[in-house]
Image 1 (cartoon, helix red, strand yellow):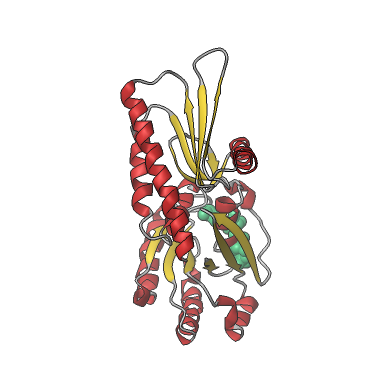
Image 2 (cartoon, rainbow, N blue to C red):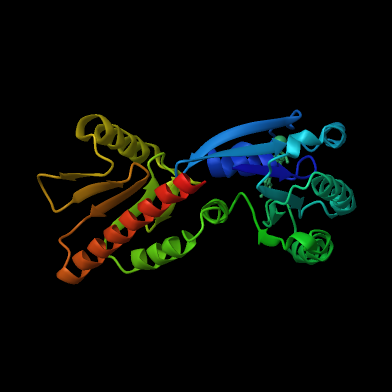
Length: 304
Ligand SMILES: Nc1nc2c(ncn2[C@@H]2O[C@H](COP(=O)(O)OP(=O)(O)OP(=O)(O)O)[C@@H](O)[C@H]2O)c(=O)[nH]1
Ligand SMILES: [Mg+2]
């Protein structure tokens, strides 16, 4: 799957990549150098190989893509990014995107389009102007991409969790019928009095009910390592597609268990107290849903 990030220089493409996929904090993106040409980053998600193409937005590079349109071929998801702090750039961005649209049409590339109205935050910016700029940008860009029925998102790297959810939804949407399961898991988690994290075995968080457990899509390092180690044991020791691991402190009531389903999905459950029967039943039902979810992912891979 190929995701292309496009937009003018400084609109935030590399920062979006860094904070969502590479575990960086928003502050760490400040003063980053402009991207030279384009960079391809590979990231496994639910066992799918995702390639994120970060197209440097300086003028000379934008021109070079127009004379070498191959660089966009195979784009499944196009993400045009508009910097809400730079309304002076809207016309220039419109020109660039118009060229991209023409080029995609000529080459019969029909991507899903997700427009990011980006930097919707008050870091070095005044509130009144932000909403004016947002309305203006929506007017210009929703129209420009209308043929492709674009979805739009109002984003900021300072809303890291939200940005990760947007990408999770974009990625999950590429597997038919998985979205419903993610939604229902999210609802189930709200009703269970234990901390639960559902991720893939590479440590991309899919849903959770624990604060501060992730940086973007990436699960916290210690838990990611734990899942990775257990997943290796599953493969090398148990030699089965699914396995269960559990641990308990010798003092207190804390318990942890990890369920790996079909080598792709990991469900980590952390209990700090004994749960009543109702709660245990909810956990059982969540686990059986996730086992089914894993089957669906595997089937989706087999079909593609
Ligand atoms: N306030 C704010 N600043 C942001 C946001 N996203 C990125 N930035 C800042 O914008 C600046 C430029 O970001 P980059 O990600 O390097 O921009 P780019 O689109 O990759 O630029 P090129 O590589 O030249 O095309 C950095 O200083 C970031 O910290 C955001 O959501 N809000
Ligand atoms: Mg960049």
